[in-house]
View (tube, rainbow, N blue to C red):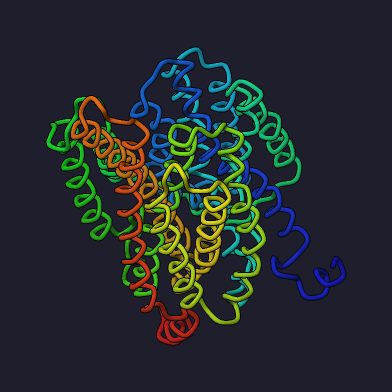
Length: 486
């Protein structure tokens, strides 16, 4: 293997490049793991610190929200700071947040820890993606992103399983204490080995754009999340006002980026049709994936009465499949493109989400495990190929901006999807209880709420499946654009 790398550079170009990727993958793995690590532990956290589900969801939704608010700035940060300095700063924030969460005495401090973790995570993934696209030629990017996808897709998939094992035998705080030494190791490793890869151009930050993007993304997710609170309706001021303010702010942000000579986030990426289509698909996939990862563990424990360990093990085969399939789909993408991988993957997602909508208390444990595994298989077939195909169409100067846009919309979609579908589940369950009266069964109410939420998720995936038939391979577009100039 070493001789091959020395002879032709391998996928990543050189041993030095490979080492840079390995260092960064370690950091991204432990950071992304935290996106789903708390899902199985939420019931115990709620009982321990005395909070309701609508409050507890902020430990996951807030994490995604901070990432979504921060990522639009990453294009500027990648151009402004060195690879090494930016990565060490991100890991430092993440490690500090992990420590605060581990020792938190109440919900407010725990949420602060999660926010700091999210700030670090929000910087790391766009940085890693941009580094890969700077190092790897177009014809090998599928394989490169597939290799990285082993970590990117495996981490959130195994989070519930690891969480279930730990929470079954220890305090939920061990989830953070176990991550802390790994994060410290990555910081030391990166300090010694990580080299600078990206070019530094020292652009200036536009504070107005930063303010508008923060209010825009933050307002929309806050509004959706507030709808799940007690005695709060969709027509309540705390729901519709943040959504409206967020929407107006995003409209102003978009207008400002399109009229600036040097935008903070270059929206010219949306001039490229494959990038537009792929972004729509990625948004829907993230909404479906994170909502399923949030809803299923809650139902398994509160509805079917499974222990955190059994609930976590339902997710394990799916995580293993995602890890195995990621490099395979990367190679298939290099050979055949993204279209049919996306069509087949979204088809699998639709079938499994439809089946999840009809889970009952008598549904066998093994069947739930198999269906979740098929869901993860579908996601693994399309996640990295669709994203790689989208970025392949862009010219080199737009790589940081394309990465930031996709990553932002993915994370915000995950936050909005989770908040929306948890709200749908809660309100549907409450409506069931009201209609049934004094004889209402809470488990049947929860089942009814889950059905509504998964049917909505199914409908969204069907839309993405239809869109996927319009995907074209970006390589031909790339050659045409290079001929005509950028």
